[in-house]
Length: 226
Image 1 (cartoon, rainbow, N blue to C red):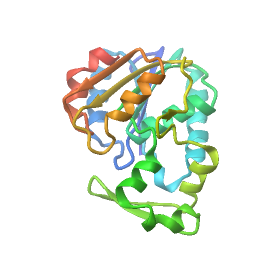
Image 2 (cartoon, helix red, strand yellow; image 1 turned 30 degrees about the horizontal axis):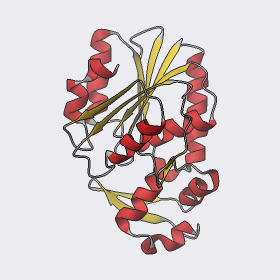
Image 3 (cartoon, rainbow, N blue to C red; image 1 turned 90 degrees about the vertical axis):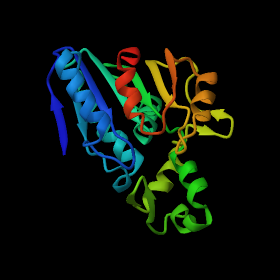
Image 4 (cartoon, one colour; image 1 turned 135 degrees about the horizontal axis):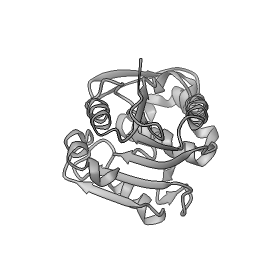
């Protein structure tokens, strides 16, 4: 499933939802309506099914989308929510920009694999880490089963952006970065964004009184971060 709304002939907002959601999430519903009403951006979002594909496969798909949309739009904003931000950040690290000018990161994950292992226990996923079997978790009420290649792909390509106190990202990013993170986030703690912005130059870092979903904060602060 995907949404493609042509509201603006020059600017596109390409949205990557989180790990446990899809294109029917509240943020996407709000952004589609807001951008349509204001004619600020054309809008594209599709079901990513991250767990069914390696991160490398997902980045390759994103490259095709961004290169194609760059023929149509002068300016592309890539917005990632939670694990979608993980993908967006790795796109900047490893793929060509084309007309991509800005990252908007909502409760961004910088180390999805580490967070999964720390939350659910490393011993439980020993065979997954070895690439021998699939792994299943329950995230935000949804059962997610990862293909067995998912974890090995992350390790082999060094996709984890934060490891301990190390941030593997350019200190002077090639695009503008805006981050919104909730102080009550218990899925991706805000300390990771605080560490990231201490090492990487960002245009704006909005700390908001909200949880991981950020649904109300996105509506409240939409003009501040676009």
